[in-house]
Length: 477
Image (cartoon, rainbow, N blue to C red; front, side, top):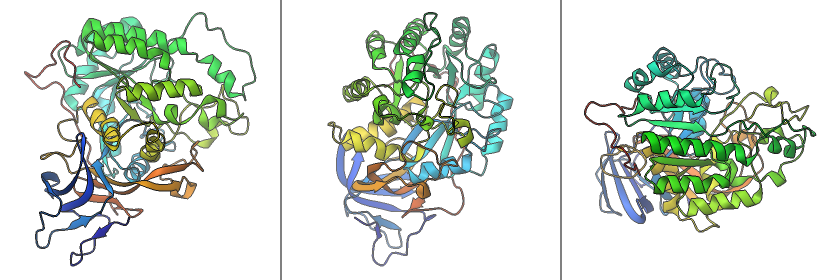
């Protein structure tokens, strides 16, 4: 199915501002409808039955039976600029996002230099991102030891919330927090609508260093067992119930943690959880020796664990799926040595999240509306964008992805827009190709090409508006 502009309407190219999107398959909440989406001033101004609205001179993009969905929100992206821009940068990350149907990313507070752990550092990051972004970008702040006085000022400056590590982050400028630090931070965040994100692994005293061949993935996997994650999730669930501060588990890898999460939610804890495309797409049994581009933390686990994550996702116990795009330069992966224990941990996948997810989800009972909920609407709610992005609704930003769920393609290096092309997905045959991406009604990606100049905005989020504080115990889903 080809994208086409209506005969008689001027030719549509990247950068065009679209007035009407027409499709036989528009995802509206939990339904799929034949619709005309009317766009004005970057917003969705109306959603009408198919073919009912034609305005002379309007730019109408008729996409036939291609799927039109709210743009994907990826709330877990390490852009690394400034400071480690050779790993990734705003320009290349957002080019990749646009090609993947992502209309907004939320940038993690590390591994940039400086990290986003103070208002001053946040302003440095905003300056670095200015004028470079092809999609919208919001920002997480960071909680580290002794920066609690910066948390409310950072919220007032516009960060979406905060991330912390319960274990060594891998970079010295972003140290992990103690339990005392967490009590201090969560006390500070009470009464706001902010959210605290956790890298949920704890060092276990009984986990003595493993001796084994560092080129075997099993050696690395044994060094980060499930019980490290289970212990951390137990701690987070207890704190969440105690303080009634919104909490979120990032990149859940171990299905053994799901019972804890489910019980905490049932008890009223405002707790959510994400998993990633690599935990749903990869299995430890199939990772070859020395292939350090598969390394991430927590690690990719076994096939049975992967299937348990899929089952939890289908049952609604996992709230969203994200990329955790965490690239680095190839030398840090120690490809010659093939040393899993010493190589940098992180997987690049930002551009291919939608097809990675759909390729597997379509065979497991997931619908197109599930895709929109897990990749668009729920992530938007997490990061404070749920009142303007993540759904096709009147008044929302006209952020849309147009894609073909039936089209197969192979991941090839020449098609990758990430700065560093190293990824375990090279050569994968995937289903579900992104055809076009619109940000506030502008075609930023169309027929394999990008808009000439960046048009994305830096999004500041207000979670401490006077008189609008969180209701203790109230779920935000």
